[in-house]
Image (cartoon, rainbow, N blue to C red; front, side, top):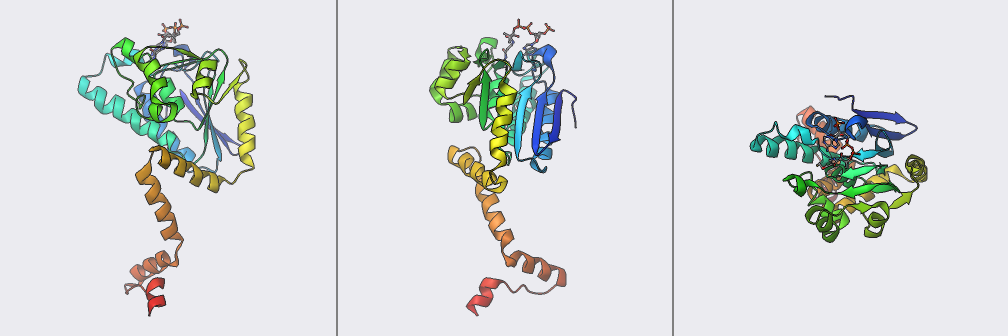
Length: 262
Ligand code: COA
């Protein structure tokens, strides 16, 4: 499942995921959301050590979910597909092994902010506007805009955007910790490349494990992290090779712990 409006390219260990729908301010429709999940799998299995997430056009990172698509959904399908599929795709992005840097070079609204929330670092250009307009449209922030956004930005900042309708400037967002760096208009990509270059010197494996533990501490993905770490440890023990060999050879396994005790 691919969509030309979501572009993924790899070069020099950097995965670049770009929303290419500038005529609609990079709003995400259901087909784009569907395409995001397999792209995340592709990134996860690649040798990229970092991901740069951006939107094309310089006017908008992402103006949110495609509002015009909503009228076609029944309430059940809205919850089932639009919201749940969005969660699955955004969860995959937030839980990538690699650090994700988002370049916010324009509107970052609603689903666009929820998308940016999946990144590990957000770089905003000075002209950026950040907000959660959903309640003004009669809907709720449904791609974790009240959950991951609260975990990552704090409940009060989310209240101000989602309940009160405040739209933050890049400087406001920096003060509130919603973005990590503010750079002049046009300088966002260079700033992201500089961060990527800094990450190049660090161990990808250590970074992956560290990201998983931070995510777990934050409540992002506790269950998966515990089992992934334990699974890695178990798979690194000779017991797995012995278990597999015993299965193949139709005999009882001789595990190392059992031998030690004998
Ligand atoms: N969904 C669907 N289409 C969108 C969109 C969205 N979220 N945001 C922008 N667009 C479309 C506009 O309909 C317009 O399409 P058209 O040229 O076919 O009419 C195009 O993108 C350009 O947007 P426009 O409104 O003309 O640009 P602007 O500079 O005047 O205003 C915004 C920019 C961001 C203030 C305005 O587009 C807006 O309020 N968008 C909705 C943001 C929102 O509520 N997002 C939350 C959804 S979860």
